[in-house]
Image (cartoon, rainbow, N blue to C red; front, side, top):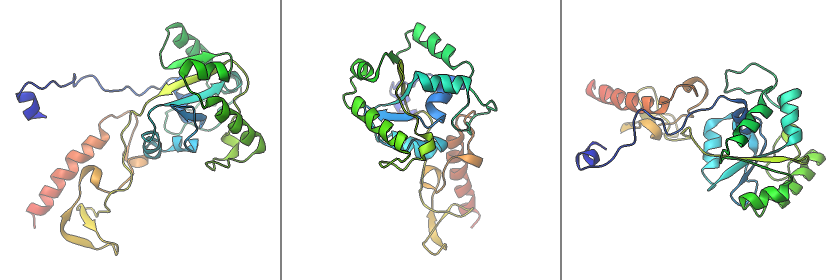
Length: 245
């Protein structure tokens, strides 16, 4: 990057992040309740329980060009007045409802927020967003929800919330947090291990090539740069390890 800048390359404002992690209730409903997700044609593509793990969710979402959370008015009313469908584990959030959800939706619609679309029914929503497969997807999803079994992706049936009562909403989303899954298995010296767990002489892995799932005890959603921090640390750590041998 330094060389590119030396020859006139432009770097985006380093003090402005590429995305801001939102802690509002609208984001909680869209990303933490395992509601219906569809892609750019309106097809469902994943077990929405992946919301519980940033790495799994990010890897699933990167397989699609676009994706949306779909919910109806009954779901909004339930989340606001009754209860969450599931705890919001990655949030510092201890309430059991989203009491301001409708207010946030109405405010964003009043601002003509491009990521949020409202329609009287699924057919109208599909036309507004050019999601030709959405009506069939929702019909099939609702049938499975009422039957109590997800034949397509195996999601726990208690999280399959039918989309039936208009108006209906689509929340367009994007992948913001970068996480890795898998990678080379290493020891505390970042030496790559073989299938028997023995270190391979002279072979080290750092950063995203090192094993580990960046979530839980190594990641806080309110601390940007956690992954970059490990990249810096592991590179220096390996240099120190090698220099001591």
